[in-house]
Length: 213
Image (cartoon, rainbow, N blue to C red; front, side, top):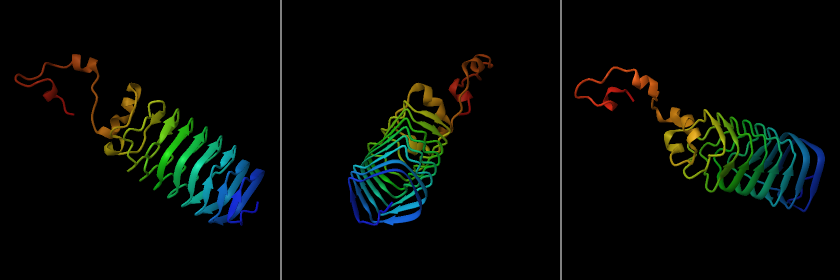
């Protein structure tokens, strides 16, 4: 595939491989990538506008300082893909496999991850404005210094995420997910049966004062 032109408009690329290439300062407008597999590919300072990736294997691809506006990734494999320092604006990921993907140092606006596996993905120092996660899998996903305030995680499967208490402050979760965030708050939970079996507290000391939180 020849991406050497500065601006590619309304192009369709199908059933092909991209191997060991670096593409710089190319614009892709209203393009379609269908069933494309990449290996050792770098897009540097590229602009993707109204472009769609369908059933592509973009594992370990690097998008270096790229801009994505009104772009969709549908049923794509993004294992270890690196989007760090790029920008998303009205970008949708549908049913994508994103293990170990790097979304760090990004400025995201109106981004949707729908039914994606984000296990061990990294969102570090990322602006999450209007980012939505719907029915995603987040196992050991990192959100260090990526504030989740007002971000709705209530439909997601979450286990052992990496974040600080400040990062998760104000996140929207359901009651079943609350225990997942306990390890971030440095508190201990005592079951009710353990409390009922304890000796009465010392005279003059309240029940709460007798426990070590």
